[in-house]
Image 1 (spheres, rainbow, N blue to C red):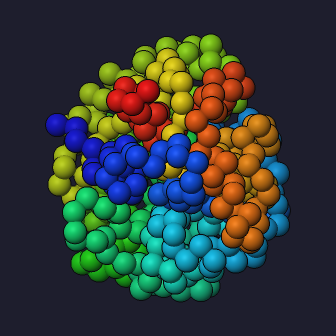
Image 2 (image 1 turned 90 degrees about the horizontal axis):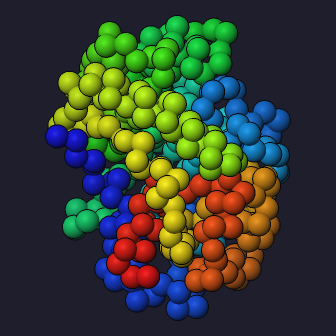
Amino acid sequence: MNKRPDDYYYFERMKFHLGGNLDCVFNGKLVYPRQLEVHLPGDGKERCNFRCAWCQGSQLEQPLGDWEETGLRLLDKLEGRIPYHIYGGAYTEPMMNPYIMDYLRMTKKHGAYFGIHTNGSQLLKLEKEHGALQEMCHIATPKWKLGFIYPNDYLSISLDAGFPESHMKAKGLKENRLDEIIEGIRLLAKYRGDRDFPAIRIVYLLNKFNSSPEEIENIVRLGEEIGVDSIRFSIPYDVYGKDFEEVRRYKQNVELRNEQPFYKIISLYIQDKKPTIFWTSPDQQDVDRMSYRQCIYSYFQITLAADGWVYRCSSTASPSFKFCRLGEITDDLEAFNRLVVANHNPRWKPETCFRAGARCNRQALSINTEWEKMYV
């Protein structure tokens, strides 16, 4: 048993967002995507306070722009037309940004949902200084109960360890930060009480430092004790910006070599009850599956990047992939709408990205594979 939670069936999510059919795809009209990725530029000076060895953007150009107020005005004018706002980063930690709560409030002002992808280091600090965790629980809303629709607001914490020593090694740290992150997660779970929103997701990327049976048992025990909603285990993919031959070698030497030993340990805990514990295989970002002729990921998301530009997708949100820039972040709604339409380009060749070392993420690979199989 290794059933993914419903939130992870991306093609179905996109299709539902588009009204249950794909007649609107590539018709030249304005169709807002399901989600807006917002990569807040760290604290404006530092991109991230951790140095994870597998940070997907670690080898990309990493400039930080100054566009937060412009972005807030844009979200206000969009009025929830893009129903899901994801706060993450190709190379930045969103919760370091002083505007993070302003963005969450703006998201909820217009009835949209939020998702936050974070290393968790700011949870306790933001709660102590601003009551942020209590406010998140107060403004979060439950999923709609009518059929297959959007999941809850959520926080996804890249924990990647069950013990402080391995957390320090995995995250490039010189001091123990894991205990305070766990305390922050505990507080979040306490404040939401017996509700299931915002959802609390733990991400665990397996490596030689953190994959002992004892450590896996400990993180599962902690997840159950705290009351998190899910724990996703996987092996980190190679970083973005590399030639595909390098990525293939990494897959052979790291992913495939470790897949069975790691899965043997994880399989003891896989369950579809709370917390849902599941495994994501290396196949879900295999570059040899990236052979499709069209990209329809634009109907799933568009990205406001940390450098102040709008990009085709979150995987390419760095000036290392300038060819994926659509235009500068703007608070002119008509101008932004033109960028959305431009992103829906049936003539865009995914090979353009692949030749430059830009790869699809899990969502894009799943969506484009289904599109290729069914419609191209």
